[in-house]
Image 1 (cartoon, rainbow, N blue to C red):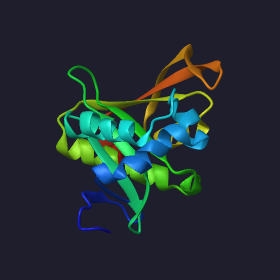
Image 2 (image 1 turned 90 degrees about the horizontal axis):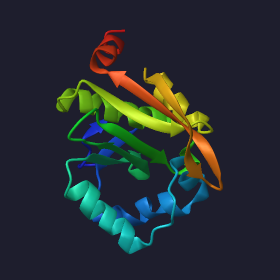
Image 3 (image 1 turned 120 degrees about the vertical axis):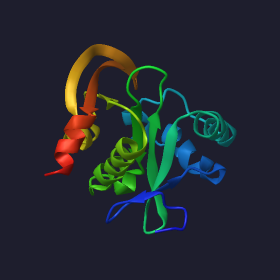
Length: 178
């Protein structure tokens, strides 16, 4: 892992997002294999991706990391910290790393980090009904389906259902003792 690793599993390391990561983050809005499942409505240029880093990562209370495997950036994980309610997770991986368990490892590292360092009763995440991979990540980590909003988002030309997941601290603690 790198000298800037904050948290790691056996296979994945999380490090802070740097401004040099703008090209990586830009890809989430331009690559259809990431953009569509993420629900990003419009592509961003490099300047907009840099502004996202400055405004959302550096200036806010959000907690964001680049996920790495053997020093190579493979994706992004973030907790949007809110004044009310639970922090909401946002995550994606580069398509060439899909289906290999890295998403579960990276999001699992983020979840563990948050429950160990942030005072919060629980976490939440949303995904789209069609995004089976994202739903699988959450379910493997113990998140519970807390409800579905029918046709709540317009993604890639049609309305899709939004599924909300949650994980309470006590549920996470129970999983830690298993």
